Image 1 (cartoon, rainbow, N blue to C red):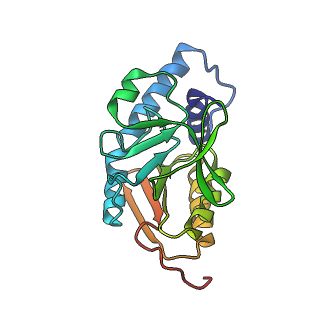
Image 2 (image 1 turned 120 degrees about the vertical axis):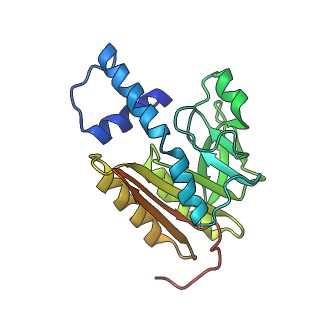
Length: 210
């Protein structure tokens, strides 16, 4: 799916709306308002990461799979790896953006270009994302923690009344329970908003199965 299609799906999942006309002026206005409201939560989510001592602004960190409307780290020193650049020069000028699809191939982080060239994601040792479009693919990130010096940070945030809140929280718990290394957890409930994250950024030592 395209970037906009992913945002639309997340909006529908969160609101529970059905039989919507995505081309109508009303829907476009509602979507824009929703995206804008979510972007205002970015700074609070980053504070949760800071409370977990997750350094997301160093050169070895990369935010994965987000775009100009939902990235939380552009202009903060962190690289964004995403296929959703879509020739947006304003997006490119904001921060360091690598236009590629990020995947875990046989337990290794790789970048897949638009013409399907595959190369290792060299130089990055911390991969982070939030509110993923593809939960199954992100669950596969657990395999990255088997690699020495590679860490992951996964987060979710939104409104407590969102229709997909329970699903997203269960996903994060399921991912956490698959980890076989030390990890940090962070959360914040502020007004009607929720913020949760799991990170192995500073807990890479292996431990016995939980």
